[in-house]
Length: 502
Image 1 (cartoon, rainbow, N blue to C red):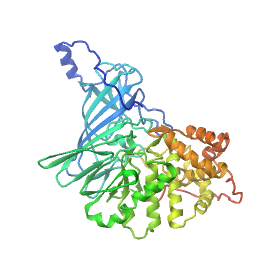
Image 2 (spheres, rainbow, N blue to C red):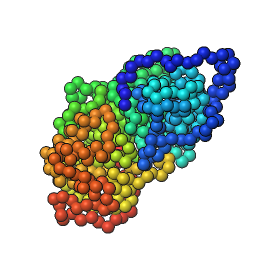
Image 3 (spheres, helix red, strand yellow):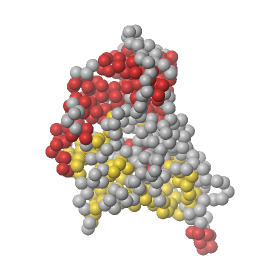
Image 4 (cartoon, helix red, strand yellow):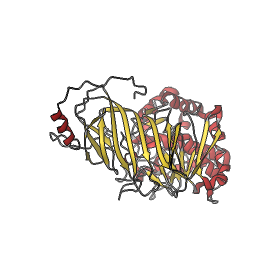
């Protein structure tokens, strides 16, 4: 993806007569009748209509105006700068669950229609291959989920947060909603007086007017749409310093600030712990967004991980468990955020490694041996594969269920693959592999095939046969070094329990 595009003069356009301008105005909301509009996709096995061919997005500029109620639509403007990779007489964006008021392409009105969950845009002139284009969509963004479709917005007790993984960002804003097309983000949020808005990245300005405030944030690294985050509520933003002077900011309900502080202050040490394993933290800031909402998960939104308030206030959770979940989301900043999956079938690399470090931390802080955890996982693995598919070939989710692919097979089942790999190639090679992975593919995307090639390179062995069984087999292969480990008869398995980390 091109991250620092050079400026380019607008494409030359023939002079239009007044009659042509009038015709254009009349037809602005119509698409050409020469061919039917259809939803497109980039061919993802699990989400065939996510993403769109023909262009690479370089940047998003998102502007939201919050009306003061989380049951009413927000007014929004989304501006996308992208470079075409084909001649385009139409441009498809992923967008659903909002009303489009107008679309401009390079400052000129464009026609638009819908097909499935695509917004199909017809510019006045075709956009040639290799050209920069700027698309501006004025629309609404509805925080109330449509029937049978989970929204990307999370309604909290006092506002909103986002949870777009895996396929819900396009229910918040128009986008190329696939992790293979990462981009830079500028996010502006206007909210009534008394509320605070925070988003991914670092602050880039605050503008106050009578009755409202506009906050602006910018990312310093490319980000997948599924990792976008916006928090609006009666919140307090707390600041502290992490390793190497890293800015750490947490966003919490103001009334819970004192109760949450003992947990929040653990983050800098956890970042230092991860850095000893992997090297420098990959982004410009980090912190936790604690939301008073019931989601059933925690989520690694880039630079600002989303957590349920109950994780920290429920006394039944032991301290080591809560800390290990914090580390799970922190580990995702390397695995899943900095190195994003090329396709959603590569999800096992995100969740497997995040669960790996969760388990290592639980072993270090809670005395919970990883070996015992992996032995139990081995016993259950055949059942997980039967229900959810092998780790690198998960079964498709139900339509509209953004959490549908997050089953045991891509959590503990994927961590089991990593454990088997360490047993197969040795701890030293395994540690080199992890560092090489997050270093080589930082700020980019990578696939399972990339991982297999790198593992073979680092270990000096052809590991294709090893990975074929562990990643794609219907049955779990024998565990290297543990011939006594036996699979159990498959039992009915579901999704991770509520509160599970993602």
